[in-house]
Amino acid sequence: MTDIAVTVAGSDSGGGAGIQADLKTFSALGVYGASVLTALTAQNTRGVTAIHDVPTEFIRAQMDAVFSDLTVDAVKIGMLSQPQIIETVASGLQAFRQTDIVLDPVMVAESGDPLLAEEAVSALVDHLFPLALLVTPNLHEAARLLNTDVAQSRGEMEAQAAGLIDLGAHAVLLKGGHAETKDAADFLLSEDGDRNWYSAPFVETDNTHGTGCSLSSAIASGLAAGKDLATSIELAKSWLSGAIAHADELSIGQGAGPVHHFYRTWKTPS
Image (cartoon, rainbow, N blue to C red; front, top):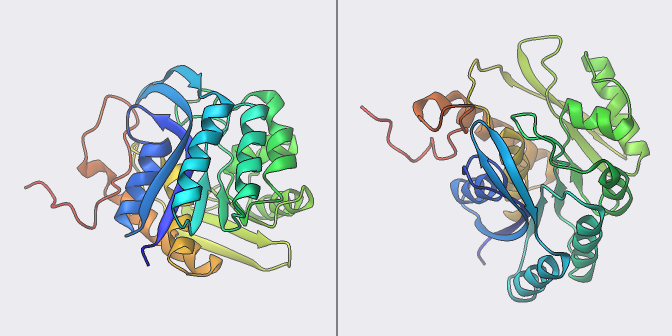
């Protein structure tokens, strides 16, 4: 059987994040990727200039088409900007009995542009936290979900991960723990109390567009291939570290460029 993952997210017209980054990640890791578009963005490496939400009835039509035909092994959820969209996606996932779900609570683009309406935050928690196997917020997203300050230390990260578990998450991978050290450290906490730190060397580069999308879709790729959650995170973290380390080999746009999804297969320019 072919391993299949589906991304439910917004489109990045610049190709560095969103649906485009997810599909590149799936392909780079040997998983067949399908998609359900929830929003169109006019976006490049410098920012987001416009957002067009896909009508909820068309989102559900995409879900019905994809999940009724493909044997889906894992789902990655990205940009869902409105409460009605969140509710539609949650209903579709329940209807097709999806369980290996990675929820990346995308709220702000790399450029700082908002991607999630304020009134959608509680809907995200209420409708998707209970369905997701893993939630993968960065430090700023976790702070917004908890209505608190951004964590500045590993101890604060651990406390905020516990706070997200209290909100109903089954497991949380809190990203971005290099506040104390030069390690790019992420913290995993499950509702059963399992915990682990995943660290990698911090890479000095401006080309980090799409890192959050790519990490969550890489984890979904591991789940789609039949790996357990801890192994999927470990492999995804290793792959993404390489994609960031090789990002400067690409020359894309005039702002924050993307990571190099295909660094393992593309030839380095001479």
